Length: 144
Image 1: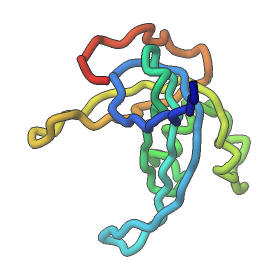
Image 2: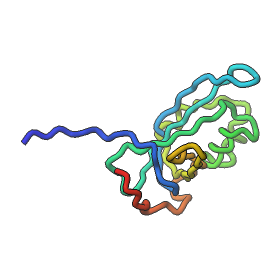
Image 3: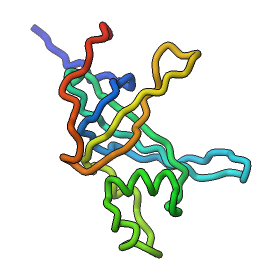
């Protein structure tokens, strides 16, 4: 017998729910806006979905690259890093790459566009480990 391992395929079509996750990578990219070019960051999450262990289950979210009060990135990371993080770091710089490998729990939600067959998976929030009641099983969909 000659066995060769088949690498896990990437799967972006994840069910809604609360799951353990790790920040896998970050990528900064430019995006055109009415104010000109702006820097954005895409954060990829390795999500641990029960019953999908044979897939490389990923989710991502894009943010405008700024920490101004009320910004999407600041609000998102504030729930993971804690309320005092931005107070303690006031006036300083923060290396976003230190987030890579950070573990936590994500809340995945679906957004269904009317012209699309499958929903878009949205990483609604990320919290420290043991913050959420995790989804224990996923509904059978017939996909595999």
